[in-house]
Length: 135
Image (cartoon, rainbow, N blue to C red; front, top):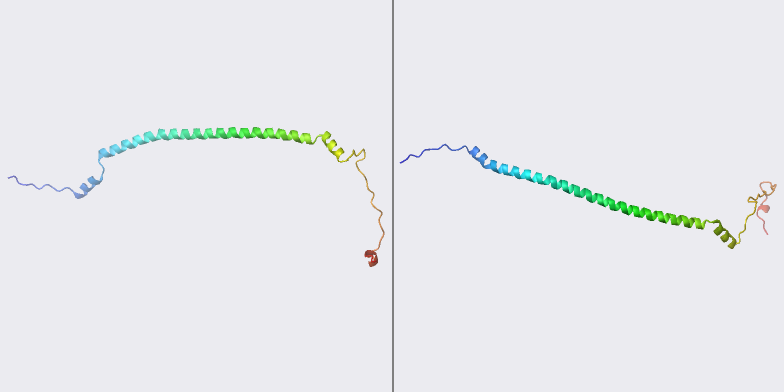
């Protein structure tokens, strides 16, 4: 019979560390997948940023076109209102309205001077009978 030999028992702390530490192959695979994910994410994010910027530029273009059309409409309305104001302020129209209201041309003298009334000499205090006339 063969005698049993006693093998030295492994250090329990070493055995525990080996069980909790990931194996080298698994670590390498994770690192490889991480590299692949980063290499795929960078171009994807760049394309998404480009698409977002282009959408923003397109939106600004539409806003600009809308503002331009509003400006043109405002300019047209301004011209119409200027024509209307010029028509309403024309001397012929104002003369016709003045004639209808019975007005006439003031002539050559435009300022009329009024002479102040003569000063009345009086004493103060006036007697009550002159201030309040009772009948």
